[in-house]
Length: 182
Image (cartoon, rainbow, N blue to C red; front, side, top):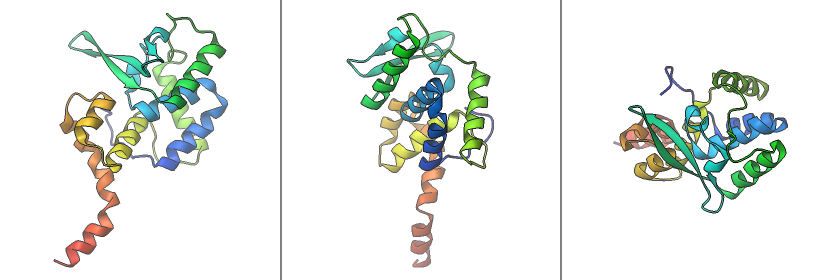
């Protein structure tokens, strides 16, 4: 969990960040994958090419819990598979190569800030914004908390409630109108 409050990015802001990164194959791939899988930055660093199962359309991520590696499946769609395959081919990666270790953790955070600035986003942006974006959008689409928790790798459903404040703001006008009629 990040130390400071995340200011959520809108769908347009996420798209603008990804668009700004389109000239860099690595960041473009990473940001697209992050925006659609919602994993934490640390979960990507141990992903090797052999952890991708294009037939089953999943990517295995690893999380450390109590000094034990726990494997979790991240679902890939056709667009992500095409982007990842193109990147693997261009970089000539082998099965044991790491997919997301081209840059350090801090380097990725700095790149996100830079791309967000170029995109004209005036609030603080970090990697966790991709996770926040996916969860918020799934809740907006009516996904049940247990499914959102499962797809994003959350251990408990209760954690998903943290993201409710963003969705609640969507209904503020309707809620105030209803309150006025009470």
